[in-house]
Structures are given as structure tokens and as C-alpha cells.
Length: 109
Ligand SMILES: [Cu+2]
Image (spheres, rainbow, N blue to C red):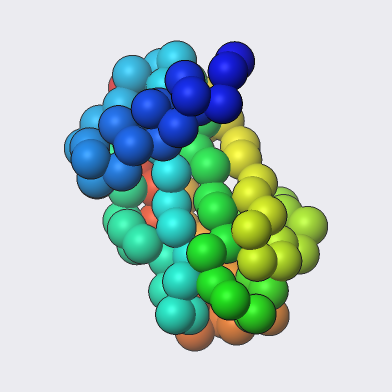
């Protein structure tokens, strides 16, 4: 995928906000000022969600306690991590190093 195409997709994802996304699109959660934005995101089953660390100097992770503790690697500023959601359900997550940071991904059938 070209950089331009990637930028357009990112812009589209940002514009769509917390709206539902199709199975082949990626939704983006920005991490900044010690928060996940949007904190609540709704996607369709099969969608990929990408977390991007937009902080200046703080690192974070994405930790799903409900799935045996599935956790991203530590994300430094500018880094990103993504995962796919194949099963409908409610996926709550926190930040490993900052458990007060929380978010949820609602996956629709
Ligand atoms: Cu954090």
C-alpha cells in the first residue's frame, strides 16, 4: 500500500470516529495524554483495530485481561500495534503500565 493511500485510509478512519467499520478496514485508536481516544469503539467482526501511540514521551501497552492477559509489546511514541477481532463480543482493555487507562472494543456480528 502506498504512503498516500495509507494516509487517506488513516484520515478516513479518523473521520469515521467511533462508527462501525467493515471487515476489511482498520479502525484506529489514538493514545495521547494518558487516554485511549476513542475509549469506546464499535467494529464489525473480522475488523482490525490499530492502536497508535501519539504521546511525546510516554510509552503504553494494550492489555486484554479477559483473554488470558493478551498484551501488546510496549509502544513507544510513534509506534503502533494492531489486532483482529473475529468473534462478536465486548473486549475491555487497559494499559499495562497505567491500569487507570481503559478502553473497550465492541465487536458486532
Ligand atoms: Cu499507558
